[in-house]
Image (tube, rainbow, N blue to C red; front, side, top):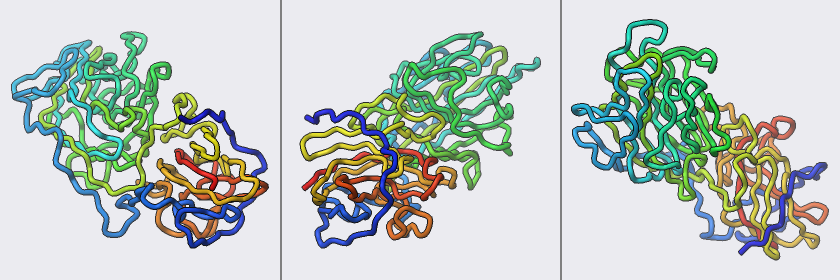
Length: 437
């Protein structure tokens, strides 16, 4: 058992970077030099691979679907909640009546943290005709860790969120939702009455109305409530969630997501759909659905920390959880460390003799350029596989790599990000073990 070593925040005035060292031992680092940690990890303790974007000739392949409904003549394996019903061969999340809310979930949790792909068809019909609430409110594809009977509020809450003052409801905590909105609530900042957004809720104490917005689509070329059957494909390749609509080649909305807020420690979540009506209404129908893991060879995967720290410790307004300070558990000469990506040389351990330091079990995702498209600007502890070049802390190491150095009797750790003020914009964290030899 580890003994708590308390919290080690970023140390002001940390020394500037040294030079890169090269050693014959693959397992140890003479930490007086700065280098990429992944070059010196103990063999077989860390199983690194690359996400398809970073490795030539590596691609995402579709694994056999764990969930497969060509229609819903049978709802076996599903949990129907609230007003959700099977209607013929479709699953009607809500009927075309006011003030309805429904959901359905696959009863067995699915592994989602390492990547997934889901495809479904939907149809929105029989909208009410009187203004201003014509055809409300929309539906959502949802991942959550609350249970197969979870249900949120009606109206703009779309069956997963916290209800507003008109129809209060506590909502579903620990949720990530892809949100198909067909009514513009101006007071909530909706861009239109025809868009797709990505939303997230944290722990119960953090849920609020409206939910946090991670991304919204620009103007869609497809009208969601035109009565036609539309096809949606959603792909999660950590840390990027991408949504495709009908025959779109490019995603209609895409963003980086910390999916661990909606999963258990094994990276599993309940998956399903929610919908709601309010002052207006429409049928919210799902006509088919498949869901499966995507085979992505990747060193980037979402982390549920081995050190328990509250989600409130994550900085606000970040898509990836970025702890507000570094965390260390010490057990003799062994240390278990959580390193926020936005702290330059943000954590250190005592090493007065400058002894070799071994690093094992490194994991996590960071983004040193959060605004870059797709997976660009993000990596796991081994970096993006290319020499970072000028403007990075360690020009000769991969961008995003976990690096360390020893100065003044301490061994320091950081992310190989842009030097200067841009470093504070980094998101995510790495978690790893270190041992002074």
